[in-house]
Length: 572
Image 1 (cartoon, rainbow, N blue to C red):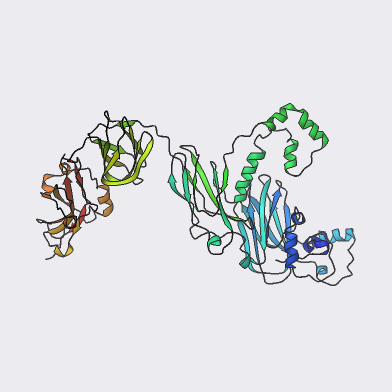
Image 2: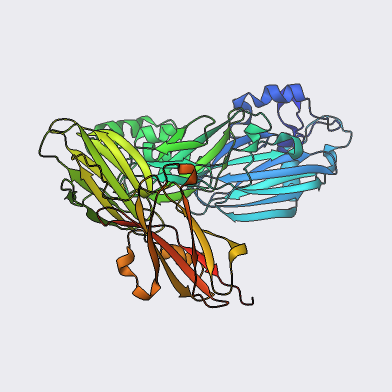
C-alpha cells in the first residue's frame, strides 16, 4: 500500500474522498517524506487515512460507524490489514472502491464546484466487499496480490463505545510489525503457592533470531483472559477514569469530558463545581484496581507475588516490540492460589515413629520440641509412595528443604530450648504416606534400615527358565535382613498398576505366607561388591510373577525395594 501525498503534505487519498483531486499522475511514495510525516502525530490524528506500515489507534462511539481509507496505486500489490478490538467486539468490513477516472488523467488543476463534488459523491457505488468480521479477536485480511484502487475499512461497535487499533501495509513480508509467537504459544504455571504464582513461556523468535527489541508484559486480573494488550490497557484506563461511575441520569464531571478532548462549557463547569453531591462522587479516593500490568524486559519466567490465597487469577503475556509499540498475545492461562494452612500441627515424641497421611497436593505440619538441651537432632523420613518435599525450620529459620524418596536421614544442629517445625508437602500424582521419626538420643542402631542409592531389582533374562528366575539387588555396609516374596499376576498387569501398589511402608507382615520365598542376612564392607543374587524356583512355565524384596531394620521397620515383573519361559 502506498500513500499518495498532495500539496502541503496532505494524503491524496483524503483529497479523493473530499472530491478535490490534483490533476497529476499518481506519484510513488517518498519514503523520507513519509517517515517525517508519520512521526507527526497531528497529521493522522483522527483523520480518515490509514498510513502504510504504521499502527494507528481510534475510538468508536456506540452504533456510529467509522470509515478509513487508503490507496493502492499499482496492481498485483501485496496487502495486509489487521484490526485489533480493545474494549468490545467490533464489526468491520473491507471493500474496494474504483478510483475516479479524473484521479489518474490529465486535467486543468482547477477544483470542481462544491455542488458538483457532492453530486459525484452521491453516485459512487458501494464497492466490492473483500472481507468482513464480527467479534473481539485480533483478525487480519491478507492478500498476496491486490488490484489498485481505493480501499475502505468500515468499523462499527454495537455494544458500547470502544477503542481499537488498525495496521495496514503493502509490504507484509518485510515489515513484520507484530512479534512472532513461538511454536508453543502457551503460558505455563510452573509453581503455585498461597500468595505467589510462577509463570513461564517460550521466547518469541522475533527477539531471539531477528534481533528486534522485544520485551514482555504480564497482565493479571480476576475476571478473564485478554486477547490483546490494548484490551487490557483499555480495562486499566476504564478502572482509573470511571472508578466512581455516575448514577443513571447524572451528567459526567468536566474532568471526564476533558479526558476525551472535549472542553466543557462554562455552564457545565459551574454546575459541576456547585453540586457538592456530584463532586464528592469523583473526588473520592480510588481503590486499587483488580487488574495489573507489569513489563519485565526480555525475561520469559516471572513470579507474580502479593496474591490472595484461595483466589482464581487469569494471567496473560504479551510480546511487545519496543520500537513500534506493537504487541502479540500469548495463549493466556489461569490458576487458583492455594488455601491458607488451617490444619493442626502434629506433635512428635522423641524417638517414636509417627505415621503421616497427606492428601494429593496437600501438606502437613509436624512440631518437635525436645524437653532437654541437645546438640543434635536426627530426623528420619520414610516416603512410602511418591516423593515428598520436606522443609525444616528451627525457631523460624529454614534449615533444609529437599525432596525425599524412600528413606532419608538428616542431621540437624541443635540449640537449647529450640523448637522445630517440619512441613511435608505431598505429590501431585496422588496421596502420600510417610513414617517420620525425630530424636535427640544418640543410637548406634538406626530404627530404619540403611538403603543403597539404587533400590531396583535386576532380573537376568539369560538365566530365565520355565520354572525359575534369577534376580539381584544391592545392599549396604550394614548387616540387614532381606526377605523375598513372589506373587503370580495376570499378563495384563502393567507398570501403572505396579506403581499404584508400590507402598514401601507395607512390610512383609501384609503378605501371605504362601508368597514368601526366603529371608537372609547380607552386607559387604566394600560397597562396590555389595550385591547379592537369588534364584527363585518353583515357578510355572509361561507365567508372570511380581517379585518383591524387603529390607528389615533392627527395630522391625522395613522398606520395600522397587517391585520387579518377570515372566518364565513357556517352552524349554
